[in-house]
Length: 81
Image 1 (tube, rainbow, N blue to C red):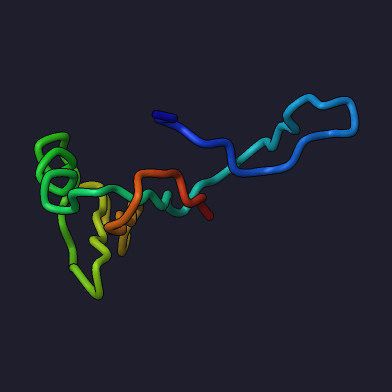
Image 2 (image 1 turned 90 degrees about the vertical axis):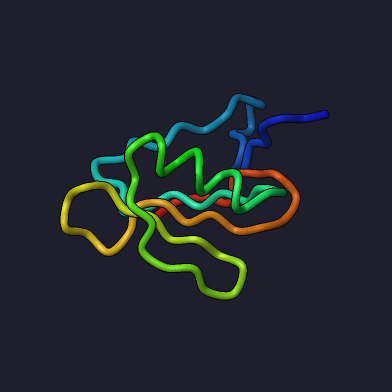
């Protein structure tokens, strides 16, 4: 079972392209058990803000709307912004 999946592009040489990020607004993941992942993330210190249509939004203790979006489905990294 592939645990992580690379989402991006490869250079002509076949090497993975690197992207330098200066600021990350949020990360999106997909997991098979949304309740279990939400429990893990809240135990980790994130705050659950809302659940809408099979997606859970979580934020840090800072006053931001959310930094983590978890959707229910096959496990995978969906990207970030």
